[in-house]
Image 1: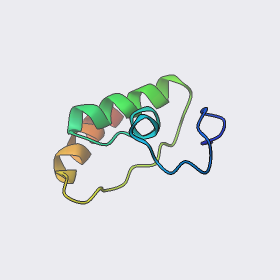
Image 2 (image 1 turned 180 degrees about the vertical axis):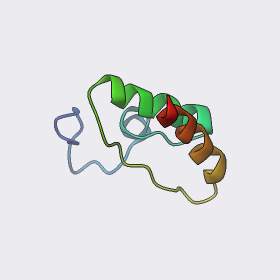
Image 3 (image 1 turned 45 degrees about the vertical axis):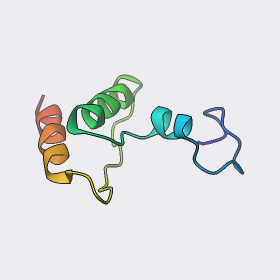
Image 4 (image 1 turned 90 degrees about the vertical axis):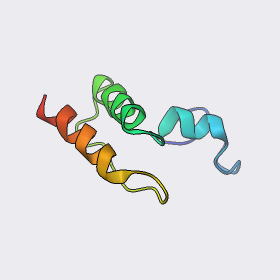
Length: 68
């Protein structure tokens, strides 16, 4: 997936990589990222907690997104 997204597999995780492939940030950022994946055809995006973030608020936003 990393290589198909245009990133070298040995480069670690540069900021651009995270911006393109991950939804790290506030609840709105996470929801926008999941929506982008859904629009691209994803049916089961992976969602996980990131230390030192407000994960409860993010889960609430993503739950509203899932509910439609």
